[in-house]
Amino acid sequence: MTPQFKISAIVVLAALGLSGCLSPQGRLDPNYGVAVRQNLAAQIADPDAQYRRDTPPAASGERAQIAHERYNSGQVIPPSAPSASTIGGAGGGAAPAAPPSK
Image (tube, rainbow, N blue to C red):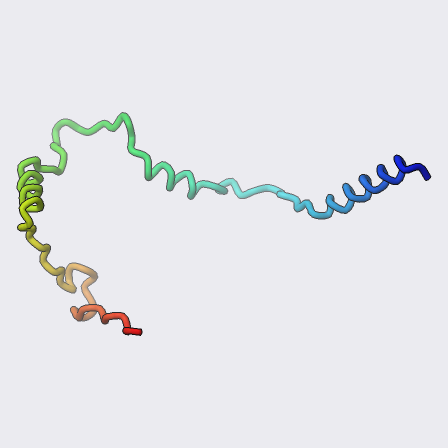
């Protein structure tokens, strides 16, 4: 046996041994990756957004300016606490318990 034959035999045996590590992919589901594409599309703003002209956008520059001035002056109006009927309709209105101290 020549050294070249030994080397080629080792390479062939190693290739055969590594072929057992392959796993067949088979056919993937047609919906594979749809969730990723939907999440990506939801995070990208439409650069050519079109809005109907008969309804103004739900924003008020005057109210935004007033809120900005209150924020800068430290006079922010805290939001009112939601009632149980606005959250889900059922359940008590108790505050959540504080985490246990260690």
